[in-house]
Length: 253
Image (cartoon, rainbow, N blue to C red; front, side, top):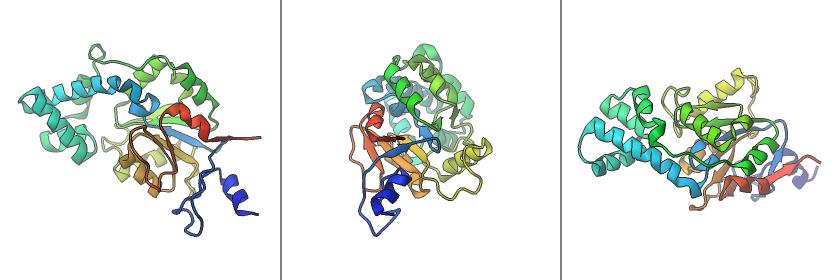
């Protein structure tokens, strides 16, 4: 079989990690029933143009940090950013440095009267429902935040379930344990084969390179959804917005 046919049959870009003997061929993602689509929530299911949604949550997180450690709101904001950078999530930093109970944190920051949610997104609903296979959210938040957002966007009917930080035992992406746990969860649901050594049918869409890198190392297909940064060579696909995924799909004839 010719090389191009082999690549097309896999439904993937064949990059240097998968074969050192060929150059990267950005062909597309085969849209078929074998696929397991994993969507990050913040700045992925809703995009950079609705960053005010995440800003409302970050404001609330900084208020929780201020309540926990004291000081000014500005100093609490710097601590929030420092914990996020050093520990992967602000919560992980609060747990390690301040003994915060995770549900206390989320109960405070998820009070809906303080938050803003994304707008109704019929085009995204159409796109998601066009994706064959299984569709899940894989988020570093507690599930009630992404579920509320998807309800506001009217996308909840297109997503089977949410794998959230609580199911990760509060140790989220980019920790390797988060990816181990979701693979086991997918196997338990019968979505991923127990003996599967080929993981490229798992497609992770994320705005964070740091969170995509462990997925790449596991052989998942990686899609960077971010208009503001350049994608390194190991990223399989780069799109500025979720709706641009349509341009990367190869449909069955």
